[in-house]
Figure: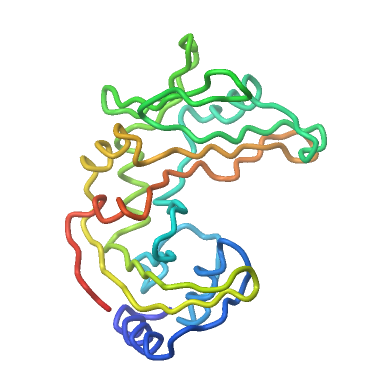
Length: 238
């Protein structure tokens, strides 16, 4: 496990190397490349990447791809089963199995298969998924459970690395030349950004071959330009 100081020194060395070819084609190439160069093992275990206390995230400069802050399934415990059963749909790619892929904001009801779908509202210390007309089964996240997820993901903050990029696919190259340490997650501002539609909720639910519900990860995502606003403190690293 690399320490914070070791990671910072490696980032400074990377900056001097200029453009480096991606280790993987596609949108996730930047994260995979940075992890390889920093000798951080790729894994699906939730929790910080650096010294077990600090998360690592990266983004292409001037890109609009959203960044996942954290993932958390909604409450109550059988919400995903209910959502898939009532709102799920089959596609050619899903081979007859139901899926529910939808991105929800806090400003307007989104569209789901051409019809009005969901909207996220904050009420009584909960983020609640609403439908029109209102559904009798309430799907929500409590403020307490969200804060626990945030604390688990960012116990001591986030190292946010930006890169210039050129080329595409397997030939894309990155120059990692900007980095910040973001600390003290600002939950109040997180809620304000949600209400303004600057933080979105991505629901990705499917089915296993045996028909059981498969949660691919419900993500709370933010636009890169607003990531800084989720934290109270910012320190220039590179």
